[in-house]
Structure formats: structure tokens, C-alpha cells
Image 1 (cartoon, rainbow, N blue to C red):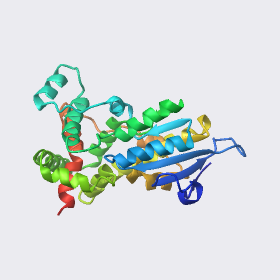
Image 2 (image 1 turned 120 degrees about the horizontal axis):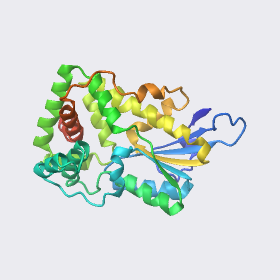
Image 3 (image 1 turned 135 degrees about the horizontal axis):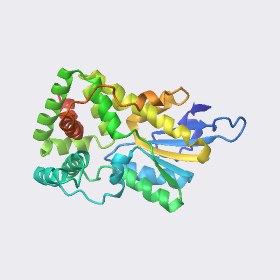
Image 4 (image 1 turned 180 degrees about the vertical axis):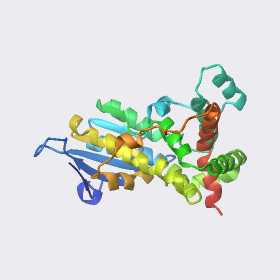
Length: 296
């Protein structure tokens, strides 16, 4: 049985915020000890968030640390710099089979965005990894596989929405990524969960995006956290601040994990591979496009 508890009551005032303190007793362990989960909400491009991760892990000394990544995004944990490759280099790597379309396009876009930031994207996860290793804690990837999320996003959109969203993202992103305006806007947003805010912004025009990109991932991460109850008495989870409320809301609810991890049933035509590349590219420029829209 799981239950959500108020962070202001359960966590000492000295712990970083925003923080949800949640409790879960292993299934079947009636009357036994509960596992305490400290779920820290971070801003993905904030040096302060990196400091908060360090402070929380050192304070509560967890046996398990969960990060909002999946196996496909695991290379972020070992990245030490972001060199910006050219599109020609990226396409050459993909054609040669040395990189998947995701790895190539994602690394290119991440490097372009990272040029404008004082903190390299994903730094809070790398900090969590270092602190976990220092304690001897186990690190768990807690997010749903990216391939499933993208497939479910694509399936949720109508043909017109697919064309409109991809076109909007590509046009705006490619025209905005190198501008001074983007750098200035990101500076203003360093204390927010930029990616989640971007998704919410696009959700106003494309409501179908919200469930596969936010709600289902909140549910997946909640399920993954609760599964850890038998393995530790203290768990720290590092997630974007925009996921914090969703995890709290789903903490004591039944979650149909088979449903939210199923690939869409639609038959994929031969052009799917390149539609997937287009969608991955669109996801990479989501933040920059939302920045422009938020200024309107």
C-alpha cells in the first residue's frame, strides 16, 4: 500500500524544495517498515538544482537513486562535453550505422541548445550518479523508454496534427536555436522545468500531446518507484519539477502498466523510419519553439 505525505511535514526544513516525501510498504508486508521516497523536482538547466541534488542525497543517504532517464538516454550520464557536430557529420554517422537516428539527431540538437547554457543539459542526473556512487547506492533509470513514448505521441496525433506539429517545430526550432533571443529566454527560465513547461505550452494547441508526454510518464515513474519498496528503506528520485504533482496524484492509484507501455497497434509503413527521425528532431527543438511562443 502506498500513501502520499506532505513534504512540509515529513521532510526537515533544511532539505531542498520542491520535494515530495512519499511512503510505500512492500506488497504483502503488512505492519512492516515502510520505504520512504524523497522525490526532488529539478529545473533541467539550473546549477541550483545540481546543488539541491547533492544536498538531498548527502542528507538522507539513500540505498537507491532514481533518475528521470531511460536506457536510450543513458549516455547522458557519461557525457562530459557537448561538441556541436554538423548535420552532415550526423547523417554520415547514421548511414554508417555508428549511431541510431535518435543518437545522432538528439546529440546534435542537445549540443546546439547547450551552447547557450551555463549548465550542460542533464547535469543534475550526472551529479546524482556521482553522489550515488560515493554512497554505494544503486542507480535506477526510472523513465519510460523513449521509443515507446514517441510512438504513442505519434499515434495520438491526427495526420493534420502530425504535419502541423512537425512543420512548426522544425521551422521555428531551426530558425531560433542560434539566436540571442533564445539565450536570453533560457536565462529567464533557469528556475523552471523548461521541458515540461514547453510540453504544456504545446499542449494548448495540441492537447493530444499531454497524455503520452506527461500523464503516462508520471504514471510510469510512479509504478517504477513503488516497485523499489522491497529493495530499500530510503529512495531518492530526481525528476523534472513538472512531474512532481503527477507522481503525487498517482501515488496511491492503480496503474495499468501494460497499457501505458504498449506500442501502438497501427501498422507502420516503410516511411516510418524517416517519420521517426522527423519526430525525434521535433522533440529536440521543442524547448526553443516554446520559448518563442511564450513571448507572444
